[in-house]
Image (cartoon, rainbow, N blue to C red):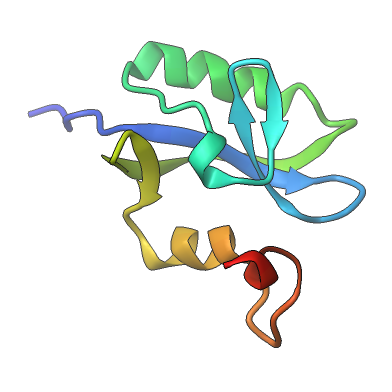
Length: 98
């Protein structure tokens, strides 16, 4: 039996800064809440291919599972929750604004 496709976002790391970034409909963002949520498997595959072809801007692009809460994507796996909040050694960057 085929696996049911669940909502996803395309995520990667910015090539120059190393920050976690998420694909939007027209570019990239550092905020998961602004990411384009993909609900169709074929669209998700195409968006991932597009991201992987941007090797001058991003590295390590992949699809990450999310769920929608209040119309915003939220991570379903602890790894993605960790990536969304940034480094854990001290409050800086994304963590200062939360």
